[in-house]
Length: 154
Image (cartoon, rainbow, N blue to C red; front, top):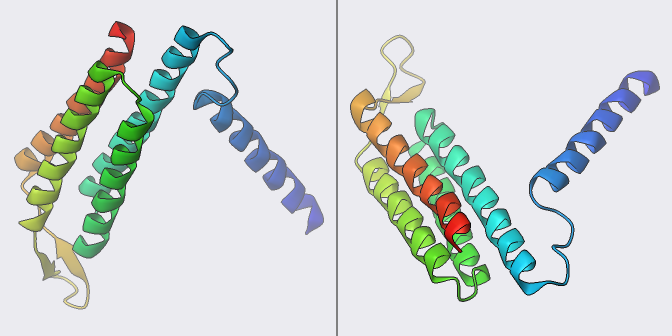
């Protein structure tokens, strides 16, 4: 038993270390401009993570309540990132556009309904219009890309 746990623990620790490096962990140096660029890149990375999570949860929601909870948490995270953006107006504006896209997804999700599955009525399914789903996911992705682009202009 111990032999199978150790490789898993090492793989998990390695993944955490890589995630820290990939998400901009570490300090950005003492130079204010380098730190600003690092902060913007870190914020853009978090927005990319939020975007991916929203798109995945929207594509295959377990429940409507769970989807709305996730969207609310995502919006709260974006508001926190806006506070972290300091006085970078381009970044703040792009974060505002991203939050607007999340709000539109929430409005879309409000219009969805859970219905019993035809094959197994004990299971609820959430039917979605594939075109509208794609449109919502595209809007979130584009808004996320705008945040990344704002970092290169800052």
